[in-house]
Length: 111
Length: 115
Image 1 (cartoon, each protein chain N blue to C red):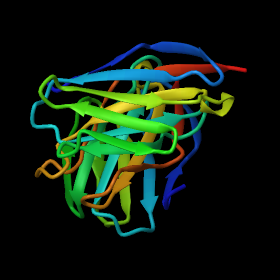
Image 2: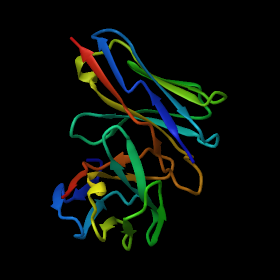
Image 3: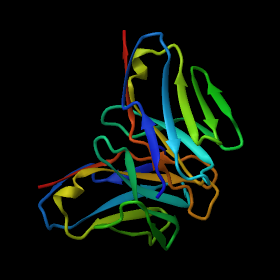
Image 4: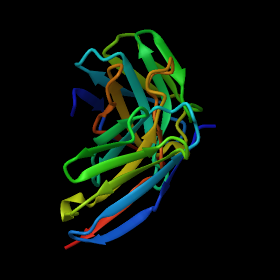
């Protein structure tokens, strides 16, 4: 899994509930990313981080928050889940100058 | 905004034939172009990448070409095999910029190789 662990692997939520997805790496990489993948739309960047304590918005940040308090962990939060956030969420890690490597994904369904 | 268009969305070939997938990007500052293969229910995995200072790169049966002027890049798979069946994604990035390496992905091509 290229040193990237995503938890949980599957989750079903009700509309309005909150949850946090965790991406943990054991490679000491600087850059970490959260993408969502929907059918026919490829992967779209939600938020990313270029180092501990820093985060930035990607293409589709609305409805999500992130934090990177420790270099090894990048958390993606949904404060009030909506059915439109049903998706597969992938975390990716990267060393500067090297390709991104993805985790195994979290399949999230919101009813 | 930045955009990557990928064609075709589906591609069916006979085993042993070649397959070509094409992408066009909008951000002229993009300088890094990876290709990912994703099998059903699995994570995307890098199969080949190219940087803007190179026009072509090969790795066994896989090759990527880049035309910076036209902002096009393509994936070529020769002697296709059933195990090549998967969804392929192209992406573009400003690899060395202060935005890190955030990737803009194409919509994907579902490749089916028939025995």
